[in-house]
Image 1 (spheres, rainbow, N blue to C red):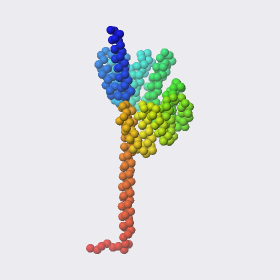
Image 2: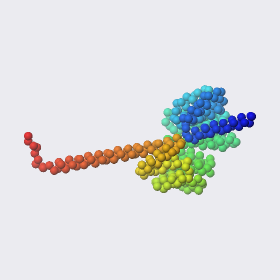
Image 3: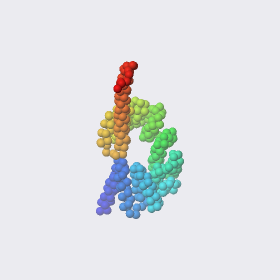
Image 4: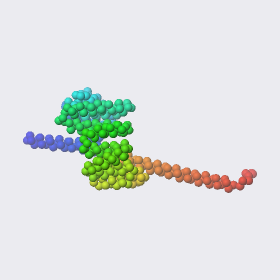
Length: 344
């Protein structure tokens, strides 16, 4: 009987885990927050680790939803109730990696709420946490891989904020260190390649692509990134062909590739084709998070159509006014020079 009970509990836990993963995968942040909050509030006498787990899910959701003030209120509540620290300290790692994740999310909330304009000052807590993790990696060999993965997450946050501040050179420096940790990791190499393209260093990106392309095993990845390179070089037709090919190999890329193809169409002035393609995928895609860029680009299409219509309208009005003016000039010049006003 006890084995049956244990098996049933395991299945329930697996189902619950799949439910959490589905919400994360689909970007259902509101549902994820509601579910985590319910578990947090209904879970009487939660231990610190379970509380930290639900707190992490709630913080991640609130960050995605942009509800920073609510996130700050929760942080203060958890510090008071469970002693969950939101400042990186050396003792943090003696507790659990989950606490470190909580600390990173808390830093992210503080970063976004900060009124400090200097991005270097705002990033100091990230770099402090980074140094502590690197020191911890040297001590904890048994859990080194786990901390390396966490370091990747931290670097991704730093890169994201540097990109927002348009600090492209600093981004590349962080990315180089990121790449050195595992030079054979193709996904890291592709990420660095995309950063080179984003920074505008097309020549260096092209040279780097030549070295890593033979290692890219997935056809969809190869076509996607080759298309990005072509687009950066201004070869839009070739880029669109590559992205069309990538979509054939991997349907999960369809929404992202549609965005790329649509942008290619927009750059060529093919507005109606871009709109038709994006609206089709918008209604087809099941993942809300992937629809955000589609909505943005569909709105751009409508803005372009409105701008074109306004420009065309102004052009026609200008042409009509010119014709009226020319006609007026013609009538004036045709009047006899000795014309005298009519006497009443």
